[in-house]
Each structure stands twice: as C-alpha cells, then as structure tokens.
Image 1 (tube, helix red, strand yellow):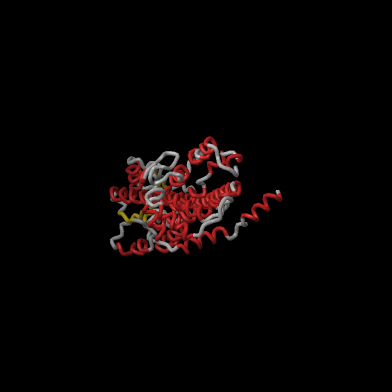
Image 2: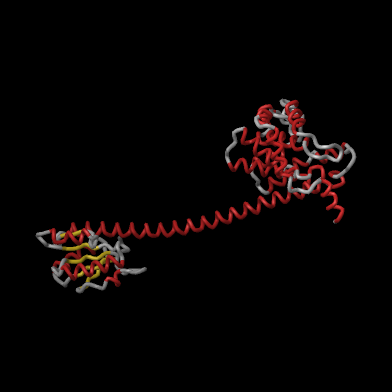
Length: 365
C-alpha cells in the first residue's frame, strides 16, 4: 500500500490530526483538504490519489451530486465515508448506488484503517484486472495476426510443395501426374485404417507429394534413360529415398512425411531398400504409401507398356499381400470398390494434359 496516496476531506481539528497521524504511522501517505475536490481531479490516466475519506456533512444533496460525478468518471474509485449518524439508514442509498464502499465512525480508527485497506486492495485488483484485460486483448490480436500469417504460410508451403512435385513429375515422363494421385490414395487409405487426426493426415499427404524429392539429385542421363539401367546407375537410383530424407530433415519436416520419403521402397517381407525393414519396422504411413504407389504405377501409362485397369491392379495388390504389402493395408484397400479408386484417379488427372500433349509441349520449348 506504500504507493497509494489517500485524500481526507476535513477541517483542521484534533480528531482529524490524530487520524492522519495514526494512518501515517501505518505507512499510508495522507493528504488533507478542507473542501471537496472536483471529481475530475481524482480520476484520469494518472490520478494523484487512490482513495478518498469523506466525512458525512449533512448536506446530502451536495454529497450525492459529488459522489455521482466521481462514480461516473471512475466507477471503481474507492470512497470511505465517516459518519456519527445514529440512523444508518440515511447512508444506505449511497451504498446501494455503489457511490461509497464502506461507512465507519470517525472515532473508530481501527475500523477506518480496515476500510482503507479493503478499498485500496479492491483498487489494486481493479487496476491489475484492467491491465490484464488490455494485455489479453493485445495478445489475442497478436495471436489472430500470427494465425493469419501461419495460414498464409501454410497455403504458400502447400502450393510450393505441389508445384515442386509437379515439376518433378514433368521431369520424369514415366511418373507424370503421379504425386498428386498417390497423395490422395494415401490419405484415403490412412482414414480407412482409422487415422482421423487432421494434422497426421495432412503430413501423410505432404510425404506422398514429396516421396520422390530425392530424385532432384539424380542426373537426367539416368532418370530419363530409355534403356535398361546398369548396376551402377541402379545403385544411384536407389539412393533417392535417403537423399530425399536428408533434404526434408534439414528443413525439419514432420516425421510422417519423412518416414514416407525414407521408407517408401521398403517391402513388408524385408526385401526393399534402403534399410531392408520388415513388417512393423516399416512406419505405418510408409506401408500405406507403398500400396498407393503401386496402385498408381499399375494404372498409369509407361513408355514400355500400356496402363493396366483397376481390376488388374486389385488382383496384383492382393497377390502380394504379406510380401510387398502389409496385409492390413491390403484389407483396407479392398474395403472400397475399385470404382472409388478409379474415380479418384480420374478427378486428379483429368485437368492434366495427356502424355502426347505433354510431349508436344516439350518439343515446342
């Protein structure tokens, strides 16, 4: 309470001097005035006083007018009224209108001190609460701005990922339009398997889009080679999961995306690469992606063969349950009719140019 100043409206009589001496001895800063100040002088952004001690003068109309002006200017300003009235009902209206906080006898110094302490505590609480509300409002505004910025960055990030993988697909004719399709297949398979967390599903989508990002480091002479790859060239191709994982690890991409990038060529029976992982050693999201990847590969055009239909893809996938694919993921795949998977493929690729159109675009460049 040492930072608070208290104003007493009173004459210079012995009782007032004794009260001031008593309160000052309790580390309270006291000032006295003989006339009631203007209400505006007690309020404002930096008021001089924190509490008013006001003796009942008997001029009730004037007191009510002053107290109402003070309450209007600052509803929380604490007022302790001193009264010897034998009829306390005369002060009830002040209390009912919240114009004063407490009433005490001018001779009861302990009661006055108690009223002052309570009034100052309420004042301090009100000031701290106002400061808290302002800080909270500012924090909410900053949070709202940060959320908008985050959403904008996420949108930019998603667009960048999709454009990057489209560019990779265009670089490798054999996988033209591939990343968009497997991303949708993977997300749907994950949901069938019971994954409902939106963030995890989005991470799986990102991992599917980025699964071949490591091919950025593979020379075109190998990636676009029309004939059979040599052993050395094949070894370089097999590096792309690790190379891709190294890229996303540096930018601290989420684990589900990283798992897909690193493990998308692992096989359920342990014959895949780069780690030769088996069964549940392979992260679930990578097992999901492996089936989605195969589904798209079988049903997509390749220069050395025509695309297969979804019935043939379904047979091939079921045939390799337990060897190439997780049987649980295969079961999830079979829960949907093939027409549903075919529809996803159509809706994903229908706006892309055909392979022949792509070749004509390349020749024009």
